[in-house]
Image (tube, rainbow over all chains, first blue to last red; front, side):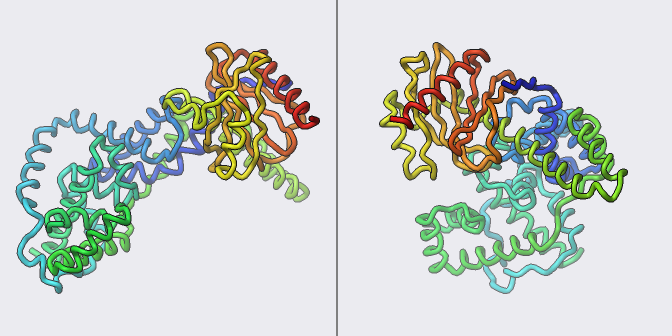
Length: 184
Length: 253
């Protein structure tokens, strides 16, 4: 009977194969959450170190949501460090106000249903300007390509909340998009 | 359905998150409501426009490099060194290099399968989902797999030999459904995964330790069997030999 002991190398190898392909996803979410390339790099690195340390606790299934959940925790710690928590909830309230009812005038007119083209950088800027919870929801859905269930797992919010945040995020983004097209 | 409800649900419709019943309800509402129809069109357009742009960021190579450095990889470096030898070597080695690459790839798959087997074992213990069919009667467990999986796993009752058959379960390893046959020895659970198409047959049973669990693998009659347990190695070996003996006897009868 052959016997091979397991070692750290085996774990490292499995971790690399499973987790490294999602580095761009992790880095992208970090960029949108932290809105700063240097902080995003630090957060992504910290995310991978934590993920590796806790790889034993990963229970199989898709690894991307697991990584993004860790990244999100890292980013929240960074928010706390920056002391922006108060600011954040304030801007959230403001956002709740401005999307009270998803209807605004002009919404129903068919000619408004098609958006003009904006370049990628501009769209990235518009998304980055959304309030935290909405920004997070729309990035996880549209860019990281997670399902509602996975977004719920990553953000710790019920699926219904994910759905309504996404609805608001899209309403806000669309308004911002139209405002951008009209120019200052 | 009211417009307020539709205003949120149409997003789930766009995202393909609604079951057929709810999707029909939203579509029926949209068909009779110009305002909601315009909203649906507008958000479909937004979604399409977003998808048309590349909004991802690419991780800088320096980040990739520093993560790569931070995660230890003795195995990976030694393998790279082997391949580098071929690259530096000569023209003769092209075929040899190809076969090494094959071994390296297979090795990765191998460790992935072992890792997934341990994960499946842990899941079965923690998620209160040890068995889908709970029976110590092999004539109940074996037919249960019919139609659920395209192989007829050997289900052997080893109760008399000290390993109690608990039941069976469907699990997933290497992206494929596999049969998990569950045994118990005192307080220890053994998950026996039965698979097919896992590469060449193993010439002899192979014991490995992954994350503190003992894994014993062997091949039999085209099946690839993998037992995971926290049971001591000699007892897991005993399980394997009793299983084999009983399986041979069952085939002969």
